Length: 254
Image (tube, rainbow, N blue to C red):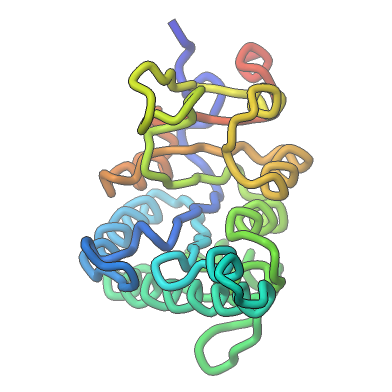
């Protein structure tokens, strides 16, 4: 019987980075749109967790509009394609900001590419101060550099602001030993070390992001956000998904 999630992670985080893919914001049946209903459901869960004094930063992808790597694979110059993807993340960031503030959650968008008319530039200490004052901070435009994913952005920003963990919202309920969409006998892990994940060749995040988390001891919690209420559960430290951390389970419990 696996030990309780609460044994090796706090029930309540002080500060977290929530990583959302752009695809989860997409209007059902659409290939390039934002669903106001989905954005609102996410905003409500974030607001509820914020009311429990959790400091929340968000990193959102732009895949509902644009994927730089995919465009590069079809002949577009990669750096240009990636910059376009960064702009797509800003559109999603603004949509989340608008809905969060509609539900009473003060929010700031900070972008790695300066665009004064729509957002603040990313300034680490300013972002941390916003969090301390109870504002949700959304990090847009990736790292500001091509060839880096928004997974890497989440790992980098979590390390910079001293987050307790990265919560990665996905379409599956954790990390499996093989693709659960293809194999009925796939086994879900409740806990893995970074070394375990590397040894087994499990793709938790891209290699750069994973290395940043491992080197800076930032636990990753992978969970299913098909049910939007899982976002609130994850933010409040409930037993959900798979945790990937530096230490083995027994060492964490010691």
